[in-house]
Image (cartoon, rainbow over the protein chains, first blue to last red):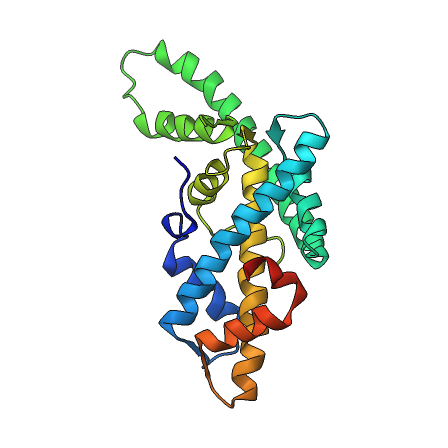
Length: 143
Length: 80
């Protein structure tokens, strides 16, 4: 069943913080204005997704990727976002790569530690790894 | 700054992406860039709306400021 935009909203606290940081000190925002911006943000995601998906389909790909989203921004006349988005993406990629390498090292350590019977089980590391694996998998959507 | 990581939770953005029946798969990077773009969008629309509050000599951003910005600015036509 398709969700309506109102059902898919973004967290109020985060939206409010972003708005406040964008505006000068001492400026307030009414609840109605905040709600309207939050709804607009949801619509933005939906519209950008649809736009990005067109680029994926044009490229005969089933998976929406980062460059499709960047192309969508250009199409939507938000070219000024491209610079900051590309920078953010680079930082994000470096961090993801760092996580993967840390995980590989942990795996090496864990293998040798399991042979030590007196070692306490470290659940924290495992939980972190599972969370990352979930994030790294492409999301399959059942539609 | 521009290189800061997204603060919008990726899971919520992902839920919106999944709402599109034409989308089958989306990479984690795509969701990240969307989240970051949405933050930039929120900053932009808030600033553009604030211009109208200033014109009205107000220090509180109101719904009508937003409506005015959406009507006046081409990039926000998709919101009408």
